[in-house]
Length: 74
Image (tube, rainbow, N blue to C red; front, side, top):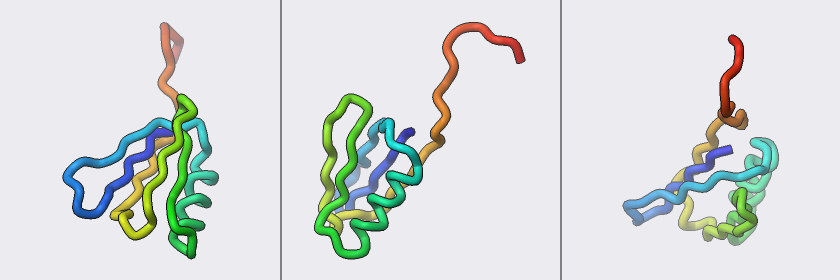
């Protein structure tokens, strides 16, 4: 799943690809907004991304489906 995080007062977005489900990411975002100090996510390569909650501008969740590789029938 592709995740885009907008950080306040920054021109660039944080973009990462994660193996977490949309429900897991949504739960982490909700927990961060309801009292945690930071939003912590793990990308597809195992790296942790930590963003302070007060710096969050927005979080955009992409689709969970992966692109297919190779030839297939429709």
